[in-house]
Image 1 (cartoon, rainbow, N blue to C red):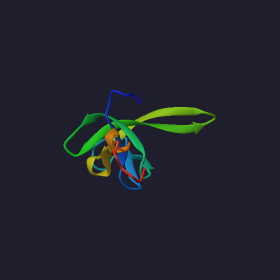
Image 2 (image 1 turned 45 degrees about the vertical axis):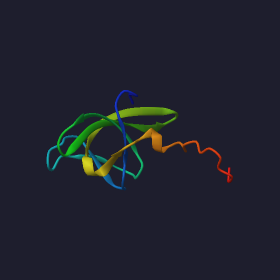
Image 3 (image 1 turned 90 degrees about the vertical axis):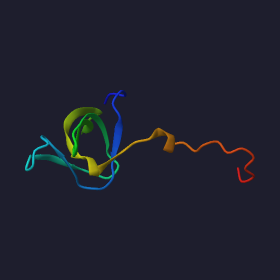
Length: 91
């Protein structure tokens, strides 16, 4: 995955990762909740991006496909770290 593209997380289980954006396109596989997708292209209803798949023995394969926009959320790194709180007696 490239660090230049925005990262998104799937927001539910069984998200279809498809080979084309067309209705009836082939589902390559289903993604679980919280899977990371690096997005390269955007359409009004879908995102095209890549994911890393572990194929065993420390090998990863980069796969490209399409997901519905409603099935993913932008990963905001600001949300990952607790902001510093000054003069908090509970710390």
